[in-house]
Image (cartoon, rainbow, N blue to C red; front, top):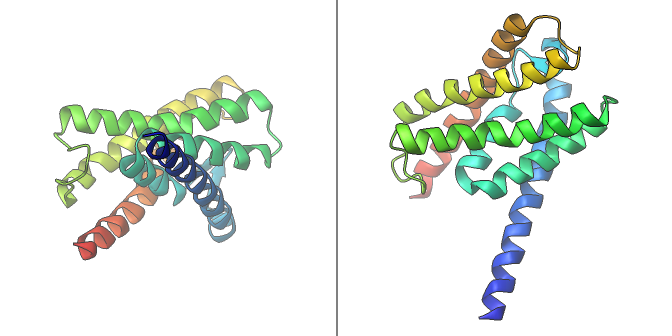
Amino acid sequence: MQAFKDKTLTVGIAAVLLSAASFYLLCKVNDLVFQELVYSHGVSWIFIPSGLRMALVLLLGAKGAVGVMLGSLMVGLGRGQSLEVTVAAAILSGLAPWLARAICIRFLDLHADLRNLSGKLLLMMAPLFALISAVMHQWLYVSAGLSASFLEGTLVMALGDLLGAVLVLYALKWVLSRRF
């Protein structure tokens, strides 16, 4: 029994660390590839890591959310912003997709094991995720004086997150459909 618990713990830690590393690396790639599409602090017209955030939390639940938080923390620490904003943004980065996942399970009849994941559900989930994430992050950025306009920042961030989420989630859907 102890060996099973040890293996489960090891797998859980590995899932968190791989989620953190993949999120961090994709943020760095996104920064390089879409450098010209940065709108303001923490806001880009296309943000591919938002889709990875959603995919990790959809697939791994709380482990994915914690991994996203850690990856976001690593990204934020490298950007020279205050520690308070960095930690808060990291928490929001994991919390937003976790909350969107919970809402989809509760109100959109998404099965926790994703067995009924469909294109239609993805089209309903992606805007919900993007909006929750954008509202939460822009509230932080405006409160910290890093964004001048809550509404404008929220709209651009939601669009960038939505585009990133749609691209990644549909790629994930395609990969999962080939697996079975």
